[in-house]
Length: 132
Image 1 (cartoon, rainbow, N blue to C red):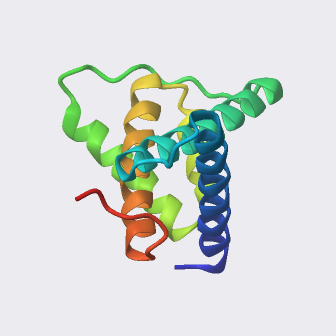
Image 2: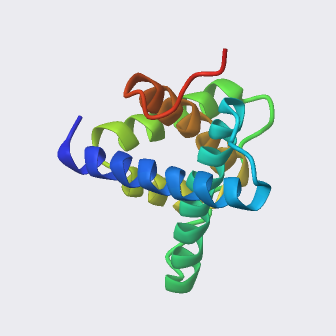
């Protein structure tokens, strides 16, 4: 992994920990292991939303037509390509590329796949515990 991705993952770890601490204070009880992935989903979703807002402020969004619902192999291929960009280049660039498509289905699928990959990475680094 490149240095930028390492920094982005460290930043995600910090955001995840901050959000967990805040939720634990609100709930007055520890966060369950099963909730950590949901929290990560929210953190990444916030980054996507922020990038989406930045793009619309800049008015640089390039619209792509929504792919047909039955074209799931192409959608999966595009999602995996974006996830590869996130891990091989950097997270922000991958999010920017996804948002530029202006394709809600693609962005949503990318969000889910990215969270799965990042969660697995955080489990491997022992930053979160995998639910039993």
